[in-house]
Structures are given as structure tokens and as C-alpha cells.
Amino acid sequence: MSCIELNDLMSRTSAEISRTAINRGNVERTDIPTWVLGGRQVASKVAARQTARIEHLQEQEQAIAAVRLRNCGR
Image (cartoon, rainbow, N blue to C red; front, top):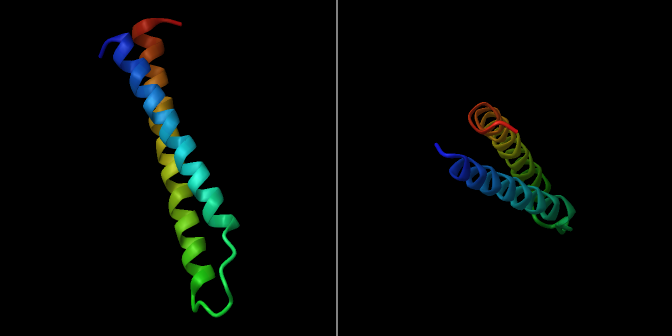
């Protein structure tokens, strides 16, 4: 991949991390009524899934950064 393509991929990955983190925060702050059965458990599972996605995206971002450093220098 060219340096431009790597930079673009890094940018898109970073944007996806930010988007997912914002969504996770919204889920965690949602006030779920007590009458919704299992609502809190669902919200915590969604937040955990988004946390796992963020961790995966961060790993991808680190791999892209390593390739970019090796191929494009600083």
C-alpha cells in the first residue's frame, strides 16, 4: 500500500474508534426504566461488545501504524 492509502486507512480506523466510543457512552448513559425486563443486562452487553470492537480497532490501528512507519518513515 502507498503512504497515502495507509494514511487514509489510519484516518478511517480512528474515526470508527471515535464513533464506537461515542455510541458506547450513549448506551452507558441511557436511563433504562425499571419496568423494562433485562434492560440493564442488554445495555451492559452492548457496551461490552462495543468495548471489544474498540480494542480490535485499536489493534488494527497499531498494525497500520507499524506498516506505515516501516514503509513511509516518520
